[in-house]
Amino acid sequence: MRMGTVMRDALSLGGAALLAAVLAAPVGAQEATVFATGSVDGNETGIGLLGVSVRGSGFGLKPVGVLQGYYLQYTVPASLDQDSSVNLIGFQPQVGLGWYGLGGSVEARVGYNLVSGQDEGAEGDDVPVVEVEGGGSGLTTTLQAQTWSTRPELFGLATYNWGEHFLYTQAQALVPLGRLGLGAEAVWQQQTGDEGDYQSTSFGPVVRFGLSTQSSVSFAGGYKDDNVRDPTWYARLTFVRWGISF
Image 1 (cartoon, helix red, strand yellow):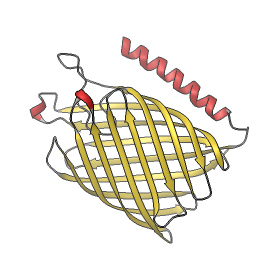
Image 2 (cartoon, rainbow, N blue to C red):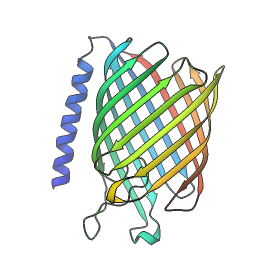
Image 3 (cartoon, rainbow, N blue to C red):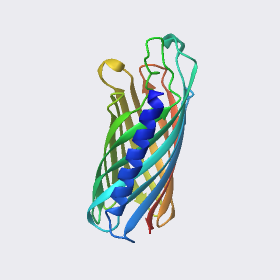
Image 4 (cartoon, rainbow, N blue to C red):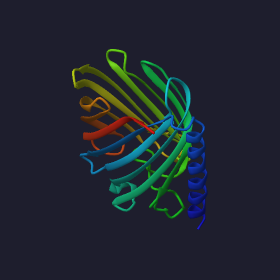
């Protein structure tokens, strides 16, 4: 099957590229970050994501590799004349370069989003994209930046799936108060081009709790609106463990 061949080839290429990026740093000078997140909303959309980022330790320009996998479930509106429920499993390897300083970092990465469980319509069209690149496989590019020396601390992420012409962006601002961090976030998603016209906006408060000097858990939730369903609520729980040296 062609999709299976494409996925195997991309997995091999992505794994080799990630290994090359990690080995580019001196032996014993890597640093890893592990992250996990789960989110749900009032329109029966849910996603669970687990990933790891590996980069050369220290300051300056460093190679970086990211591997993440996710499970996505959402309900398709009856007006779209599709199966009522869609379940997708995605896997995405990415490699790139990052600049890391005393007070912040910037990363630029390229990779491939691999999705299994896609339905094919009567004319061979993929199911609609509804959340976080979940609609189909494709080349991805990502730009990520964050600061931890500013007040508030800032985080920004923009990723584009060229196969599905889908843009996902997220921005957060948090003010640290001891082990707590209080702030807000906004998420904008849009499918561009002729493949669809899905758009989604989410925004709400964020609360972060520091479990240790190198780990945290945060909760975000609030209002979500798109052009396919009725406005609703969303909630997301995120765990991050950084600074793992090896």
